[in-house]
Length: 256
Ligand code: FES
Image 1 (tube, rainbow, N blue to C red):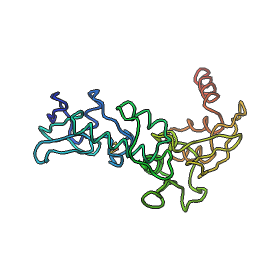
Image 2: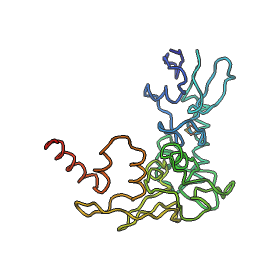
Image 3: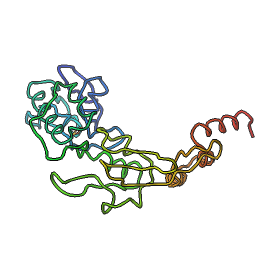
Image 4: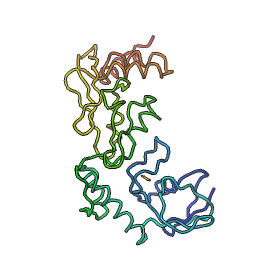
């Protein structure tokens, strides 16, 4: 185990852990936007800023989600320098994405209610990249990417057109920390929407039992191709989750 100190508390960390992981394990609060336990460290939003010192580091502000622990590392999560830096980062994020309710609520929790920085067109996206990373790293599809630079940088599908690779799973929308990506089911179609632009439109499959449209055919095929649990996806293939549970329970109770 590796001894480190966070906010005066002596803690034991495991090798290769990041400061953010150790802090979370011990209930120490550090705000984040671009970090997710299912994904590797990224360091895009800088909201997880902390103050760290200990050889070989020079004392300074760093992103806790990318800083790996080492023996005798000393971390402050609430020092005046951290509070000030976090405030400016919140202001910068709010300046870019003032329409995001989730971001405004998070900023408010840390005492930031307004921003000195304003961009021409406000929106929800803070360019944290979680949507792009989860689609590529966890789903294995890579349907999303960044396009443009600077103020014009935005999340889009390939070539800015309706995606041909998206499977309509909606994981990007579920993980987006600011609500910038939405998933909408309308009748027999699922849409993935960034701001006002539909980047994917997929037909939904109806449940064989109850008739409700519940999942895209592409997603079902994707799961089937990846699953190694024989039979499990066969049940889920054309049944909605509710009906699948009933059918599975009945098959278990009846037995072979
Ligand atoms: Fe660490 Fe975004 S959470 S940089």
